[in-house]
Length: 452
Image 1: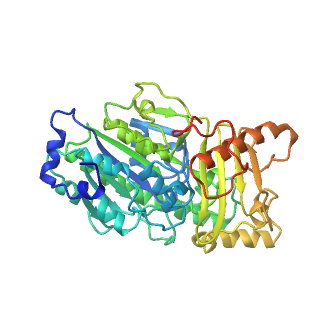
Image 2 (image 1 turned 180 degrees about the horizontal axis):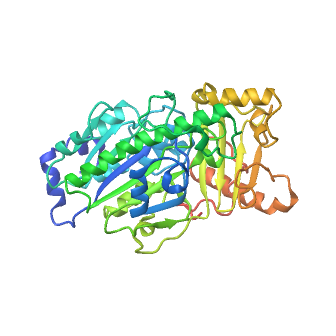
Image 3 (image 1 turned 90 degrees about the horizontal axis):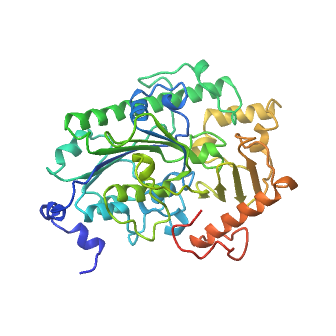
């Protein structure tokens, strides 16, 4: 009988172990995902944030230095983690859009192979998705041990833990770990101001609170003798909740931490600089489980970078999109190791921070400084009446994306190449937005995964 989601979810749990007979032992997966968290905001990555548990994962596993989300928005990017497709392909590009019931996810593939799948807290794909996808689901009020108590003996598992830190609103003074505002690192894209430092300190405090809960999960894996055969992955769902980051296609909005730890399989202290996209995550889990990667997925497995075994063809580029989040601001971007091109489809509109950023102390301080004439020319980019349709940045010379070189003749060839790459990707992935070029280029029409 052909596969259907209904037949899978109605399969009696007692039959699942039979699916594993005669197969090699499959690994377990623990997926830890933070909420609004930019690279490099962890102690192990160079920021003065107290994160001893995540630092341990980094020290004993692999740090991916160039991981990028498919969207700088929460639920759209999370949908790509489940499907291996960019959000516009699966009709999930608007914030809070539930996952369509016709979309198959990698969790379905794992469950069909006998995995016990569970989730805590924020999944953000809709209530119907949680009901049909997980064998086990619990909210923030439930202790993590409940999943392990419910885990059938001998079953491999996939556990998703969606933390709500360091998402706003921050509650100043109510964190178990407190950072000194004088010691925070103010990112270059933000002005250095006392109110902004206080806000960043709360961001650090929320990250540290999350790290404490990561420690609880690691302790449970150790207590249940599950460390040896479990791949632990940690990442963020999009960038930090500050103006110029979350909700934008600048690097602070789309570049996030990615750590991987698989005792006995990952080499301690490994750092990988290859470009990784969140659409690559489901492909990696499926390959690690010994399962085929569906052709519909647009990502590629980076398992060889985890284990040091096998060949890996590095990406030339990663892509990201921004659509509706409190307001419609359609953007597309393509990023290579050196260059970034952003396509603003509504360039006549100014930068508009999304709701939680608009109400933040940092945005209030930003507006105050702007009105007082105390912002630098670079920081004033968020205070302009309009934006360029095309932004192009040389990240080697300008890592903070302050100097748009889209009209510089020296970068004409780079601009042309990136516009074509972006347009081809938009055509290939069935984007609803008109691309930079009206017709596919020479690299279009090859099917997935793209060779970029």
